[in-house]
Length: 284
Ligand code: AMP
Ligand code: FE
Ligand code: FE
Ligand code: ZN
Image 1 (cartoon, helix red, strand yellow):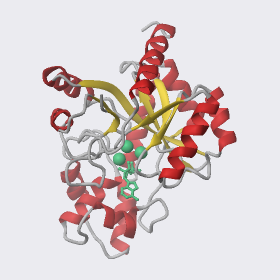
Image 2 (tube, protein in one colour):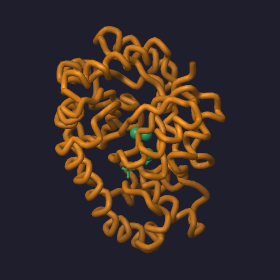
Image 3 (tube, rainbow, N blue to C red):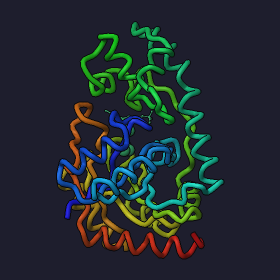
């Protein structure tokens, strides 16, 4: 049983339509995937339809933009009710912030010698409801300034890069409360990945567990083997689930093929139990 609990579609910054993503997952021999688009549930109906057609289980997921202090932290959420008014309103606020920062980013890019237009970004975003830096990167690649997304991030768009512009995200404790109230199970995405290790030391993870955090995504390509082992031990000590996923963003766009990291079947079974009790607790 192969279980990948972290994937993206072109509803956010992935490149495959939800149904195509599920077809690729089936072809890659996966049995279960979770679609975790950034700050939107919009891809879930199509992905779940495709899952039923292709005989692969699609767990409804989300990757929510949150803040710990001033540092960006991604929170995965599984099984949220997708009609919860408070959560939907907060996700809409985050997506609005994603769009609003674009003019300032265009100005910075022009000053840095990489002029592009809003239309070029819109063309790359296509029907995506959740816009992100990867769409900006795609526009710069389409212009011929860079060869791929990774090069753009390394040069311009990383959190400490010269073209970076801040945006609204939900304070992490508030996000935990919103997800929990919507019947979802919250799991920290890549907890000790690119930028978040500093703000999420073990003592803080223990506090977050008391605030409702249910798991740590230990198995992620942003973690080396030692980090995965540390997080796995920590999760056991704190009574948290250990999950894993590819963080796949589409064919040919990243170094994260589907299934490159997975969740152990027994951990997935625990997650299913948590989902059932979370749903029962919130009456969904
Ligand atoms: P945004 O959601 O607009 O803040 O952009 C963050 C997204 O950009 C992440 O979800 C990744 O898909 C991608 N990303 C962030 N940092 C990097 C990086 N250093 N290299 C490649 N992709 C990145
Ligand atoms: Fe992304
Ligand atoms: Fe992430
Ligand atoms: Zn992701």
